[in-house]
Amino acid sequence: MLTKELEKRVNASIKETERLLEKARQKYINAQKYLDMEIADNLKLGNSDDANNLARERVKECEDRIQELEDHLDELNKKIPAYYFYNGFSKPKRIDPYNTELESNYLGDRTVQFMEEHTEYINESDREYNNQMALFNVYRNPTLEELQDANRGMCLDENTYLEEFIKKN
Image (cartoon, rainbow, N blue to C red):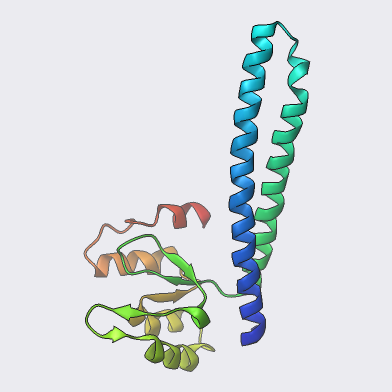
């Protein structure tokens, strides 16, 4: 298991990579739009399809950059446990347990209690950790079944808000 400090640094790298990935996806969208415009313009001008090669290369570069960042993100994610907050009101959200504030409508700020419990159960199996931390709606490396159980406990359809999670796993 990683040290707390190393885990924080990896989490910071994950956030930065996610930011870069979002920018790369936007660049890809823009490059694809430019390619579409180039194709239309060259078609009107009667130019051969080869005139679009430069724009196609740009799209390919963007695709390669996205793949590179996604691979890097996958590698980073494998280095640390994945913690998720899931309360049945939206899709599971990946969190950094050391930089998360937990609020309850009824009990107020639960951050201190969460960190105490997190520290107590951090060395337990994922299953045991999740059984104890479900009180805070926090799960470590959750299985689909664990999140579906949470949904059933909230009287939701078992796959509500889990579509992306199902696709990833």
